[in-house]
Structure formats: C-alpha cells, structure tokens
Amino acid sequence: MKIPTIRFYEKIGLLAEPPRTASDRRLYDGAATRRLAFIRHARQLGFEIDDIRALLALSDEPDRPCTEVNRIAERQLAAVEARIAGLQALHAELARIQAASCSGGRISDCRVIEALGNHTHCDGHHTRYSARD
Image (cartoon, rainbow, N blue to C red; front, side, top):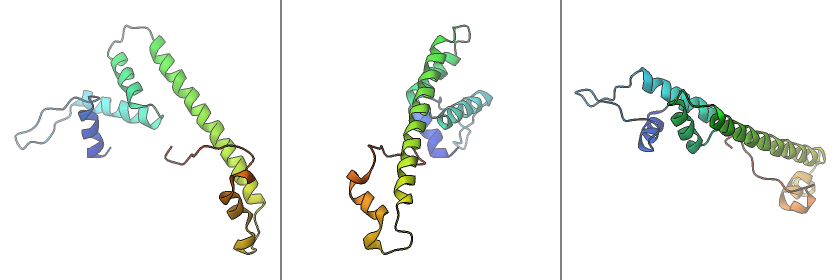
C-alpha cells in the first residue's frame, strides 16, 4: 500500500496515527498492520469508505450479532451484480457494433465510428464502465 493512501486513511480516521520514533518515523504495530490489510482487502472487494468504517467498528465488537455485517455485505454483493449486468450489456453492445464494422474499409464507411457518433445506432442505454470502476 502506498504511503499517501495510508496517510489518507489516518486523516479520515480509518487508521489511528501511530507513535513515532525519535527520528519522526511512524511505528505501526501488528494491530495497525492487520487493520490496513482489512481496509485494503475491503477496498479490493469494492466496499466504500463508509462501509469499511462501519465494518471496522463492528469488528471491534466481537460479541455483537452478524446481522449488520451481513446487510453491508449483501448490499455490496448487489452492487457488484448490478455492475456485472451493466458490463455484460456494454459487452453485448460493443460486440454488436464491432461485428458491423467496416472490416478494413475506409473510415468514412466505418460503422464503429458511425455508432459512436450517433447514439441512435445503439440498441439501448448504457452507462460508462471502465477497469477503474
């Protein structure tokens, strides 16, 4: 994890600022390292910061029931499923546009360029998705 990311987590309160050495270097103990690993894994699974904050707070109360944790995880799973459905629709539309391409013809006759320039050539509405989303 990059240092600016760790500083950001400290700034927003997901991670306590650790004690410092005489030379002003931060000293992270095992608990802080485990907390950072938890945060990183949760981010990799797509959880938002507020959900991670809630999950961390809940993890600090081991005797509580899992109901709230399950609710947060179910909500994230639904968001992932919605993203997958959107990406599948986007894939189908791009495949359809590409299949109608000009196959080596001239740009002036290119169906991909035409479809990108005129949304009415698309089969439906689509939302922007990228590898970063």
